[in-house]
Image 1 (spheres, rainbow, N blue to C red):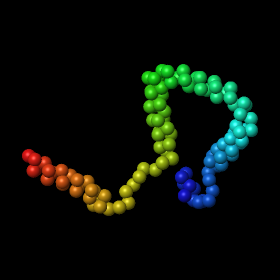
Image 2 (tube, rainbow, N blue to C red):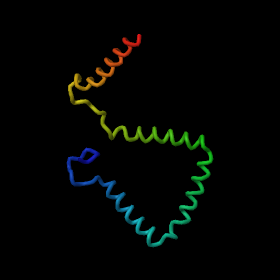
Image 3 (cartoon, rainbow, N blue to C red):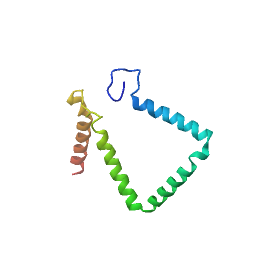
Image 4 (cartoon, rainbow, N blue to C red):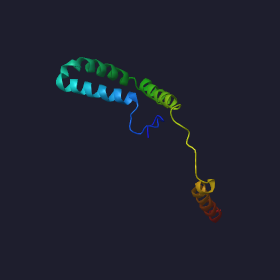
Length: 108
């Protein structure tokens, strides 16, 4: 099933097809002419190295980035709803708490 909710089981969503085509083209370019992107990656590596030296800033950006991604994906994901009986869902919890109570009574 399509993760974005489409009923068609055989067709990817368009963004996946675009990403796959772009990956193939850039991969071919990287193998055929590796010197094309070397200056870009050297500049990227240097800027990320400077950013990594500021540990508190890097951790803060990472923390806020994770929260931002979760908030961005929230409308696409549904809230999980239990479809089984509540008695069977709570059975492991009841058995654990019952065993804990028995141990507490024995110790106390």
